[in-house]
Amino acid sequence: MQGVSAIPEITLADAPTVVRTAVATGRPAVLLGPPGVGKTQAVLGLSDVRHVLINAANSLPYDLLGQPIALQSRGSATSVLATPTWLAEIERIGRDVPGMLVIDELTTAPLESAPAFSQLLGERRCGPHRLPDGWAVVGLGNEPTHRAGARPLFAHIVNRCAVYRVVPDVGAWQ
Picture (cartoon, rainbow, N blue to C red):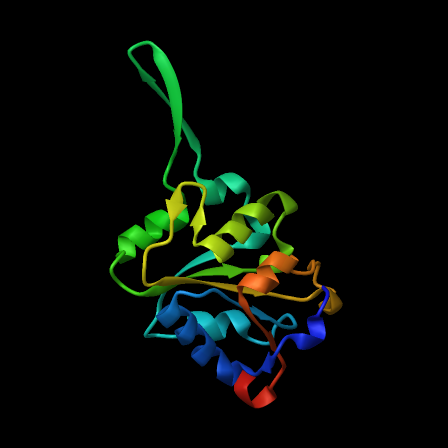
């Protein structure tokens, strides 16, 4: 990942501010850090911000885009994409309630899913499905140096998101 040294460093104590700012502005944020430092728990533990969680490590493109459904009408066939689980969950929570779509393990996503995650982060949509106003995308992941099977973030994600490196802080972790 080129320009890694330019990524600002924060501790877990700073994560709530980053997430609340992302939700308030609708701008995407990505937190990178070693495995086990508490990134996911810090983000999901915010009681005042609703969330929907996607585990990117085992998500395939149709999980994000929705399954194709064949439709037949008067002898002609067409297809549409079903509402994906993440959007159905947002609908259940409420489109008018601010929240965040959390993409955990972003840097270990299968390569075939990377374009869909990039679209969610950069454009707030995935195929025909749009993230509602008031919802932000927050990505979490490890860096390749952590030896956790992670790949570098694509440059276009780094350029379109607020990316922070979470440094271990024993006091915040406890």
